[in-house]
Image (cartoon, rainbow, N blue to C red):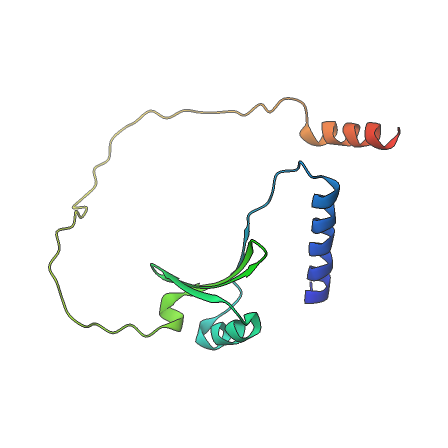
Length: 131
């Protein structure tokens, strides 16, 4: 899918939401994982224009707000930043020291979702458009 086709699909989704105002909203953050490395991250920042750089743990984000919906470009922080050790400190941390095997009992499950949801949706659509 090229970007023109992608944009057309987004317009179809927008029309769907306008036609169905009570339908549950999708996420207000569109995450893009297609960049690879610092060079692509910088290119994305230039294309986004006014955006916010956010660093969360091991991730780097570029966030651009479009009227309350955020387009977020995501990359591993190690791929866009230079890590420099500036000192050392001692910390207390719980670490696993071993595992043991035990026999445990677990549930065997089956799912019953009742009548086919797609069948009901098709019947509803048929009723809606036959009026």
